[in-house]
Length: 275
Image (cartoon, rainbow, N blue to C red; front, top):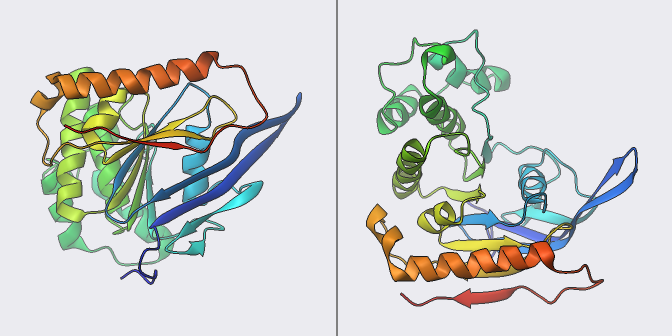
């Protein structure tokens, strides 16, 4: 049960700034980036390559410390990894010497906790992996491995799930299947999700809002409300409304790639598209 007061966002990103120290000098990855994510919301983050999307996500997870600013979970600052926050990476990162069941149990072993077998069985059934518990990662397809990674993250019952472009390496058919699966899981659990992707279409299909970051250093350029009812079918992706919204976001990203750097940028513009 959240302890946040009424109106407090689930995740609050406040002037997040991240500087990496490199051999050739300091690299400013995020510059005063601010964003709120509400409870039970799916927010996708898109932007030019290298704009700081993954840096922002890892900072939300507590795995990267910010240079300046803060990120809050239910109104409390995140200063390190939190059990309420699960993360799914670009690669499934399953341990090759462990079977599927043992991979899902691994986080519980680290924490010294007993897994909820009924909940894990429900998740495995939900993603179509029941009966595969004895299989090793090499015996699973890429899509099955990513399903297993989602189960591993959700097995701990996080209130926030961070997903760092988890389907980028999958073929288009499997990717569409995984997008439908994420929405189904969200409808089932109402877990707050922050999703990083390079695919604008994927962001629109999955999200309540799409956040566009500027070119590096990353700041929030625009936020688009996605007005389509859930559950969503793939048919909506062929509609004029989705086509127009995709083009608007695409033009924002293309514009950010060529826009000359300036000391200051305007505040994020909230864009609402009516269906």
